[in-house]
Image 1: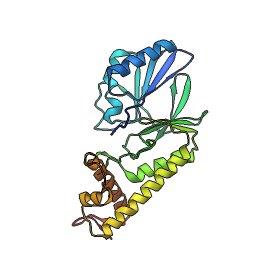
Image 2: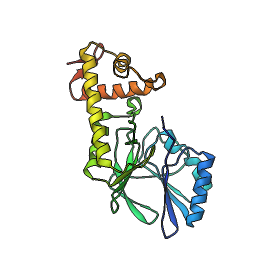
Image 3: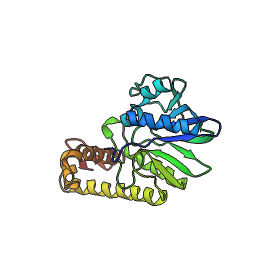
Image 4: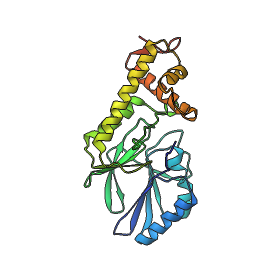
Length: 252
């Protein structure tokens, strides 16, 4: 589900302070590379900024806390899910946080998860986008764990309106043409919605059968993710007043 793996971003300032965006999983090679990069930059790790609470972004927190005991850990709260043994510093939408010696603006961008944030470096137009996009793939909306498609679409629109120069995602390569990718993501979700509606019109009334009708050539190992996406679309259509889930899913 993480493609080629996880990206974390180290921002080291000329003042000797450094911040890490996302914590990784505690992989020893990652920790060794981080230590080497800090040594090369003659910097200390002062802050760890986490985009959201999924395991591939927070499981490295206790390892980092042990290796860098003076570091502070920042995250938007996710009640009931934040169980890491650190004293989180909360981040709110629109707040500024210093990474190295540069300010980043916190953007609350829910949808993939309720607590998801992105970090906007306004002077360069770069956005550290977390799990909002993956170049060459799509993002799962985990509806059974707080994912919300309507919020996700609004988050994509919010990034598009900022006209970023590049996106630095948590998985996959850097995105050099954000507008094209964000518009493609929005178009893809609109297409999926029409496919879900067509499946309902054809008489499919449960998530599994709808998913199978849309993702007919999908690797079976990815079908659970497909079901999550279908459920997210159904939940959005329900909130839009277009479908009901009484006695199975059906169009109103």
